[in-house]
Length: 68
Image (tube, rainbow, N blue to C red; front, side, top):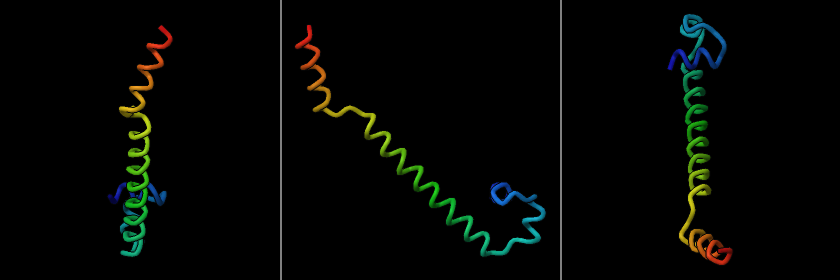
């Protein structure tokens, strides 16, 4: 976590250890939690839109049979 936080702030980990406060840790934790939640939310939406449902499959089979 220290490495990631230092990378996010653009400082060396040693500088982060000497200059950072516990408030910095809280802010970083909140930001990372929010990003993870948004990423999971996006992944869930992507999975549900990419997966065909039963109705979609029936329609696709019906259209295929009508063409042939």
